[in-house]
Image: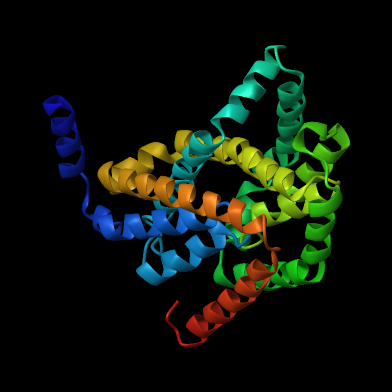
Length: 297
């Protein structure tokens, strides 16, 4: 135990002055934002972009790549929340890939198929997306458009899913492809991966519960791959710039917040539709516009 503490002290004591940009409080705040918004249809990326501007993290060329990597790697906390809450389903999927569970195999294959489109597009267009879309204005546009889409279509889709929707075990390859292609839209910051995958899952005929669960499972794979990719690519820069302790704080906070958010959302959608998220998206876009107009961000 003392050896571990010594390593942490050495790691944090050797961090350059730039680490002061990401204090423990800011790391915790960004972790909270990530955890609460990752699996809700309101866009975690959009919220993180605005929050980073508010607290002045990653707004300088010398720390931008490290900050961008931090906001990706704290997704690991949200991923761990899915593991904790859906470990039985993940175990079933693992057994399915080993040939021991037919339903698990079908869900696992569907998840892998749905993952592929966004993975390909994300890798091919990574630089263009970061250079052109990672700004407040693209986020505001996506928040508003997504909010309108939810208000126009979510009620009918939710009611259909609640009455006639199929269980997750019945998901087809065709349905997985449609959901996967829809997930590509969420590469535009502010759109929300959860929003497009849940709506697409309802469109292909899944029940509300199945649509939400598949969105979480697909997020586990998609976010896991994105986190691993960015950590391998820029992880050294992240820890050289910010040290180890503060990013770890953000990870823990993101995990706890994601557990709370997932449980709340699952229970909420058993009784209500998605409309509240549509109104929220439009409201938060309005707040961002005011912050822009007043020069706060």
